[in-house]
Structures are given as C-alpha cells and as structure tokens.
Image (cartoon, rainbow, N blue to C red; front, side, top):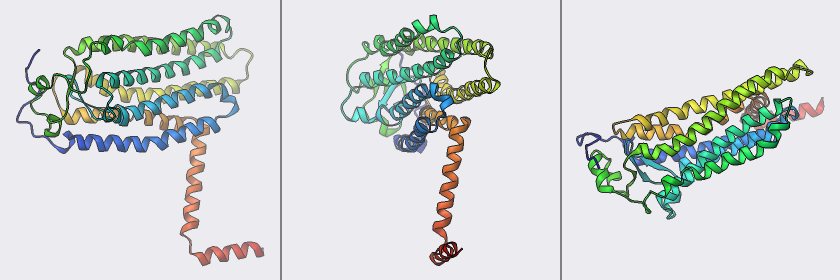
Amino acid sequence: MTTEPLCSPDYNNTYLDSIEFFSILLHTIGVVSAPIHIFGGFCILYKTPKEMSSVKPSLLYLESSTFILDLTLSIFCTVNALIPLMAVYPIGILTQLGIRVPEVFYILEIIAAMFACSVIGLFENRLFILMIDKRLWGQIRIPFLVFLHLTGLVYFYPNYITMPPGVENQKEFILKAIPCLHPEVRNAPLYLIVEDKWKFLFWTACETLLFAFTIVAMFIFIIKALRNYGHNRSQRTIDMQKKLIQAITLQLAIPFFIIFIPISYYTFSNSYYAAVNNIMYVLMATHGSFSTVVMIIVQKPYREFLLTVILLNRRCRTLASRPTNSVSSGLIATRMF
C-alpha cells in the first residue's frame, strides 16, 4: 500500500468539509425531491393522453427507479466519499440499521443498474412502437430486457466478494493517506473498499459500456425507424411521435450530463478535497429531480397541468387574502344578479 499523502496536513477544514453540511444538504434534497417525484408520477398516471398510452408503463418505470435512486443516494445508502481513495464513511439509514458496507454498496449498485435498465426500456418501447415489421424483435425483446436486468443484478458481485465485511476497514491507512480529514470524520468508522480503484471500476465500467452501447444503438434504430414510420400515417401522428422522441431525449440528456460531472471527477481526481467531494455527491443525488422537472416541462400535457395547478393555487391565495366582508358582499351580489 502507498502512504503518500493526498492532501496537506495543514489544510484548514471549513463547514463545507463537514459531515453536518453534507448530511443536512442531502436530507434536504431527499425531502424536496419526494413531492417532485410524486407529482411526476401523478402526471404520468392521470395526465398522459390516450395517444401516449403506449409509453405510460415505461415512463412510470423510469420515474419510479429515478425516485428510488434519489432516496437511496440521499437517505438510505448515503456514503461520504473519500476520493481519490476508494474509501467511504457510511452515514446512511441502512448503515445505522446495522447493514454492512459491502451490502450497502451492492444495493446501491443494483438500484443504479435498474435505473439504467429503465432508460433502455423506455427507448426500447419507442423503437418497438415505431417498427413496421415487429415479428423478429417481438420475439426477442423480452429475453433481451430480462438479460439486461440480470446483468444489473450480478455485475457487482466480483467486487462484492472481495470487500471485507463490516463498517470499518484499513482505517489507519486512510488516516495516513488523508491526514487533513475533518475531525468528525477521523473519529468515525472508515472503510477502504479496495486499494486499486481501477480494479474496482473495471466491472462497473464493463456494465456501463454495455448500457451505453445499448442506449446509443437504440437511439440510432429509433431515428431510422422514425424515417420509415411516415408511410400510410397522418402528419399529425408523425409529428406527435417526433415530439415525443425529442422530449424523452431532452428529459434524459440533461440529467445524464449532470451525473457525468461527478462521475468523471471521482474517476480521475488525484487529490483529496472534502468540500468538492461533498458537492459532487450532492450533485449526483439531484439528477433524478432534474429529470422529473425536465419531463414535466418538456411534455406538453404535464406542463399544462402544472400551470393549471399554479394558477389555481394563486386564485385560492387571492381569495383567502381578501377581507371577509368583501367576499360576503361579492357572494350576495352574485346571488342577487
């Protein structure tokens, strides 16, 4: 093991480096994101028009997996990442309930994989709808999706079996490598996942490449299928499908860009900055909320429903702020005329 310090022992810790800041911000995000996801799920269930009914199950699966991933990152499987070491300080609810770090990581990785599968499922749904000849793909689509979900369940297992049990591992090495740790972190149980992060990232990278290749291939096939979709169909139907594809692409592109930033930092960072690690993790935990907000904005039926709710809320506040006698007079006048 190398013990070369990853930061200066003279580093002055700030509030941004503290676990208190990290925990408060994450729990706030978890509380704020819940109503956003619930509203998004309500829109999918009750405000999706009949013309979009074929995409409703896939959208609902995506929204559910996104919601679960957000809660997992911000509340249940929360870890304070000690990047560039593959080390963490586990602070999530599952850890407090006695679940060991290897199991916490396995749960987190599975939920992240299921989120990726939901994205692929959404694209696959659009591809199947746009296909003219569905016979071949109709026979293999279910086995294909089952295969992707199975890989999401088992890809982390090679890393899992190499992780020592417990909530603390190689703490002395971590303290030597990162002498500038915040005092409350130094006194906490620290867990070194693996010495060489590239060995740890290998299986994750393989699964990520599989999902990324599948999503890109699906998108290319969708574009080709959309070109042939116009035969014997009305221009209104064609425009609706194009707008739906554009909205879904935008809904997924913005959150993926958001989550790409912290993942890139975690992968290639060579120095320890607690505040940056905290902010990057928080940014990663917000991508689901961003995805739902973008979905509500870009999907016209959901956007119109949101505007209706906002306008109705304003009217209720306006009526509530009026004097009682004015309201009563208005009611009397209304009844008279």
